[in-house]
Amino acid sequence: MAAHDVVLIGSGINSLVAGATLAKAGRDVGIYERAPRLGGAIRTETGTPAPGFTTDLFSCWHPLFVGGPAYPTLADDLAARGVVYRNTDLPAAAALRDGSTAVLSTDADVTAADFDRLSPGDGDAWRSFLEDFGSRAGIAFGALGTELLSLDGLKLAGQAVRRLGPRGLQQFGAEGLESARTWLSGTFDSPTVHGLLSPWVGHEGLGPDDALSGFINKVIALALAQGGCPVPEGGGVRLVEALAGIVTDAGGTTRTGADVVAIQTSGGRATGVRLADGEVVTAREAVLAGVTPQQLYLELLDGVPAVPDRVREAARGFRYGRGDMQVHLALSEPPRWAEDHDRLSRAAIVHVSDGLDSVSRAVNEAQRHQLPVHPTIVAGQPAALDPTRVPDGAGVLWLQLQETPGRPTGDAAGSIDVGDGTWTEGLRERYADRVVKELSRHVTNLDSALIARRVLSPADLQSWNRNLVDGDPYAGACTIDQFLLWRPTPQTRGHRTAVDALWHIGASTHPGPGLGGASGLLAAHQVLRAAEPGLLAAGRRMLGR
Image (tube, rainbow, N blue to C red):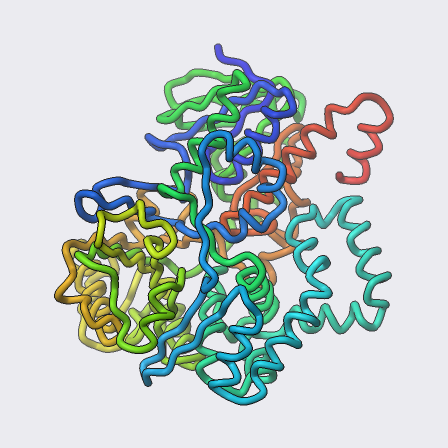
């Protein structure tokens, strides 16, 4: 029977960050993953979609990791294991159907000049945003990197009151609840600027008319402006391998094909896990579960009396957002943009849409389980940052469609028969045809340079990762009732659970999705604090730290 100090269920970014942090602190860590490879939503494949190409099939971009709280503590260890991040001064761009374009640069003057080109005065509005929101960014990013229901959360609240004053904090809170539409339309005059910034809320599973989307829009815009949109050279697998290496180099274990089916408890305390083959793995200090609330409370803890009924009911009601489709295009040469090619070809991500209303319309159609007529296309260009991912002279487009219904009931355009809503290969490819045709309006050599493509439907995503329910890449809707203090549910308290020595981590928990690793880091620190001797540990536990 295997035994570890800490057992982690799943091997996504949060489990890997937690495991590496605990291993560096001297803990014997065991990571158990049901899939045949480590990484969760980080999955890199070579030879896809054509020989010589390296593709991140799911997640690709790491701005929230590099700019988040976990990376500084692990950067030296990652570098020693060969992790190199590539970046660009143009993390974001937009190409609208009317031919207009816009860019967001890490150079504030470049962005401001482009905004002024589109609408005089928008450049000053951008500088004002960077100064105003930037001065309060410590509070905003602090809320996304702190266990809010804890002593640390109280400290952050105290800092916010001292920094802003009661009225300023009240105003900041009100602004945090506004929609992206409200912020954008009240700040910038150019529709093209709206089209540049508004699609980014989709990277948290929100739409531009949702409450809280304005706050998310500001956080992401500032993160891009300050840190760009980096990718690890050679693909996300390099980060996975390095984090796993920190664990194994310290004597820990990583196992794939190890399906955890139950959490073992004794006296209200987690003592280990049981695998599908009957093997029991003991945890001397803690168990960390990187799963959805339903998996944790309705499956892994089924029948455990320490879990209150109200928590099980809340977990049962946890909601998932829209699905996602990934389209990977291998090209014989780099993509040629019809407009503003010199700049757009250097951008990490180009959002292709018809502006703010188009983004909102596509979100609405997907939420009504319809295939959008004009989906917002997230056109990623990883080879613009990391040329090692493609053969010499070749190009690639990493496409994400964040407004895809997990189970479509119809087509808003009325031209695709969705059948019974099952994502068959035929339905998947027909919808991808629509997307590629739309993109070819903006990329002039898309037809002539296309070598191969690979399409992943929402059903494909869920089949490869149980946390991506109905293809939701964010493991749960990020609406205000399932965010911040209320993620995953109002009946749970941060990453702690009602079972002693059991922590809940992953994108379904605070601070949500985004490939940042923050929930794993927070839980790892709590495990270490729980092991502190005497009254100090007891005091921390009472205060929820």
